Length: 419
View 1: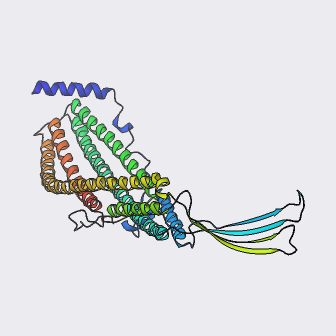
View 2: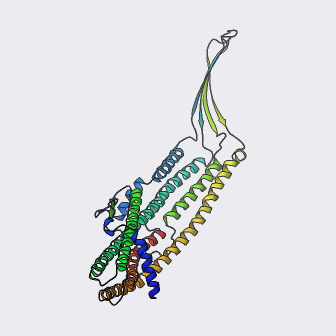
View 3: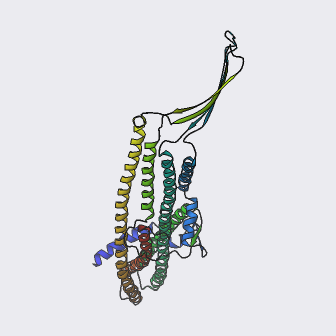
């Protein structure tokens, strides 16, 4: 055992000789992305503010505009545009016998049987789909905001623990220096303490980098540098995926929209719609002395609609089946996500209980070990091993507390509960 310890000391001495003096290394990084706590900002307000700047809002706006366009179409008196045609015929450029003819005709495109109600149904379902899709996007934004907030919380816990660990190693280094000066410890112990201190500085630098990374992600997502002071959530009472889950409501509304689209395709002739025309004509031949007026009404009735519009109807059926398949995939995904959220919450609760007990033991053991080292009852290497395990237990307990709150938020997300 003594032989192995001498080998460890030799390796550490060889490594640390090449390192700069501990005092020459800066204590901490200067740059931290500013995220300010705003006590007046709540989690629901943050979600709403993020939603207003979220890129998918453009899709929601387009869906609303589409629904409005369908509403205008369904409320129209005619199925298509109205046209006015004017004709004038004369033989002046030929034999010039005095033949003249002028006519005017107004042509109106009328609805097929059931076509207007189909258009109004499409408009209604499009409006509902736009609203439900907006709620689904809001839930997606809530998930991103929740994840970003708790990512920052975890990064901050690790950063705070890294600073605490650095303070502990700094205090130990000072003790070792004094005892080396007094001749109680060897120079190798000083190098060992310096190496431990440098390692903790490196871990602090990494922890700071994670804090900056998490803050940047948060600012990029929310487009703000303010965060709520309180964002912990109460666990939702829901135990399963309900039919009013925003994502399920969105896909169901989309399916209803596709079904309305099939009825529209069945009643709409994409090649030629029925038309009614009303017109009048004034004419004079070479024998007449007075103009003759006449009026007429015409009807255009197309045939073969189902044959020519079969591709459009088939496309509408395809889109409906795609939406139905999408819903089945979504249901399975939501059920899987709920199971994982339940399991993560249960495991975290158990781990937190164990971690808190280990933390109490670790703090007591660390205090006893530090006293023993000061009294010369144990060597520095044993102290560092116990100290590392104890600090890890303390860090884990703090992390489990944050993870429990995070997993409550993730459970609420899984059942579709908005903040």
